[in-house]
Structures are given as C-alpha cells and as structure tokens.
Amino acid sequence: MDFWKTIFGLARRKAIGPPLAALSLVSAALVFFLIPTYYVSTASMVLTTPATGGTLSADPTRPLGLTNPLLQFSDGLRVTAGILILSMNTPEVSAELGVTPDGPTQIVINDGRTNPELLGISTNGPFVYVEVQSRSAPAAQDVVLRAKERIRRELANRQQALKAPRSTFITVVDVVPSSVPTAKISGKLTAAGATMFVVLFGGLSIVYGVTQIRAGRRRPPGQGQAVARDEREMSDEQAWEAAGAGYGSAIVDGDPPVAIPRVPAVSESGEGPFQDDSTGIIVVVDDEDEPLDRHDQSADTIVFTRAGWREENEK
Image (tube, rainbow, N blue to C red; front, side, top):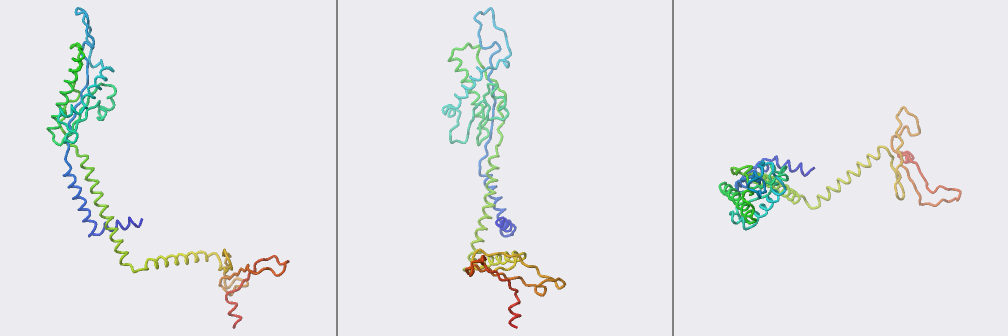
C-alpha cells in the first residue's frame, strides 16, 4: 500500500508526472506510425452442381430432370471443396500468386472457419474463403483476384483429369465478391497502448527506485537499526500499557511470568484496606525454596506488599 501511495505521490509532482506522461504519449505515437498498416481483402465462394445434377443420362432421348443447384449441396461438394483448399495451401501455389513466407503479403484459404460470418454455416456448405493481408491495398486485391482464378482453374483441371462429363462439372459461385481492401489497425493500437503503459509505469518505477537509493545513502550508519529498535521498544511499551489496564504488576522468579488481576483503587468515599492508596499491588512468587515441613504442601511463597509500605515504615 505504501508503494502505491509513493508512486501516486511521484506522479503528482510537476517535475515527474507530466514529463513521463508526455514521453509515454510520444512513444505510443511513434510506435503507432512506425508499425506498417496492413490492408485486408476477402472473398467467399461456394461450390454448386449443374441443374441436371451430377449424372449424365445414357439415353439422349430421355434426359434427366432439371433441379435447383442450391438444393443439391451434399458431402461430395464438401469433399471437393476440401481438396481445393488443400491444393491451394501449398508453397508452390503461394509462390505462383506472389506470396512468400517472409514477404509483406500473406494469404489464408480455408472453409470459412476464420470468418465470423461463415463460422456458423461453414460445416453445412462447401465454402472456400480467401483472405489476403498486405501492406499495399492494390496488392491485396490483386492477390485475391488471382487466387479466385486459380481455384476455378484447379477445379476444372481436376474434373478433366477424371474425365467427368462436362455437363456435370461443378462450378464455383461467388457468395461475397472481392471486397475493397480495408486498413487493419488493431495491431497498431495494441502495440501503442502497450508502449504507453510500459513507458509510464516503467518510468515511475525507476524514479521510485532512485529516490529509495538516495534516501538510503543520506541516512547515517545505524540510524535504520536505531529507528527499528525504538519502534520495537515503543510497541513493547504500548503492549505493556495495554496489558496493565487490566492486570497488576507481577515479579516472578522463573519462567513463565504470572499475570495477576489488578486490584482496583478504591475512591475516597469507598471502604477497604487500601482506600488511601491507589497504587497497584506487587506480587512476588518464589518457587526456588523447598518446603521446610513435609506438612507444608505449598511449593511457592506469595507476598503481597503495598507500594508505599516500606517508605512509611522507614519514616
């Protein structure tokens, strides 16, 4: 608690708080402008079958009926989408699209699991989601367009390689066309906020450490021990005073000490053997002497003495 009080006290000083606040703001602004801005462009596509389905009639005079392609989603389309996603995530295809591992442009191709808008329905439909991040907005949009064309070409080549009838070819339809690249500054804001926090509280911690070191150097040798000893003695005195509020003084030869209740002082109008004396009672307990008589079962001798008795007898 004292640490935070000292920190807040240092922050309120005009020579410490305002300069550190200004330095933290300047550092955060520099980090924000030095970190490059990334632009994001996305596209969502879905695989569909032709209206005649995935089967070609063997009798040309009896063609198959026509159906709605949006009502023919099946596990086969999802498997095909998975094949396309795996083929597009190879290093060779990334290099063909102009994306290098340590370059300024990054691409993600999946079934929509990284897109919150497609996350809930990506398991029910054969989606292909493309996301490109680049330091240049035109470069991001160009990579997205080339990735879409590469997906369509890959799908057509695989169907041709399997000698599927052209009338049964699966097609790729845009669900959401290529979006206009938007600036992504969340990372820059996070870095700037972290920098401001580190500079501000780090500076306060350094100032706090310097002040503690200087205070220790200015203190004379042994003063810290003397202050600690005085504090201990003061606490002991307070403890004995608190104990003396309900107990009398006890003098015991041996351990442990015996606490005897104090006999309250009697007022002038009261009665009792000690009505003329308000001092406490001194109790002496001696357990060293052995009993002289075997009939004397008491091992201790207790003497009650009034504080002013000896002075009165000497007079």
